[in-house]
Length: 126
Image 1 (cartoon, rainbow, N blue to C red):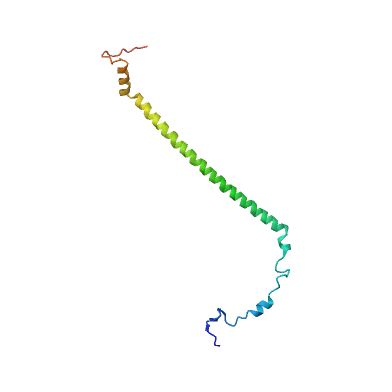
Image 2: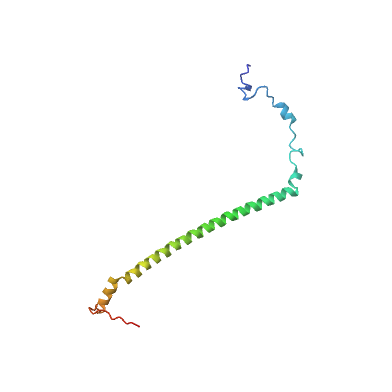
């Protein structure tokens, strides 16, 4: 059979030209070889310290994120309370100004039967 080449890749089999997988299969270590999985490297104290440190940092980050979310919710509640308090304060100021106006006082005085006097006020000097 003829081989079709495109650059250095065998087009029919889609692998580099001249690639023979057999030597690599023969040279690969067996599955039960101790070089594939070395349990001693996992059981070193340094590895556990790194894992413990990483876990602690991860938990601190999660705690900080939860604390920030809680503070954001509390901040939003306080802002709402501040808006309500400001609104009530503004309404009370308007009511106070209305009650202090001359129109309200003169109307209330007329309801009580009081009327303004045409005699000028008397000034007392000490």
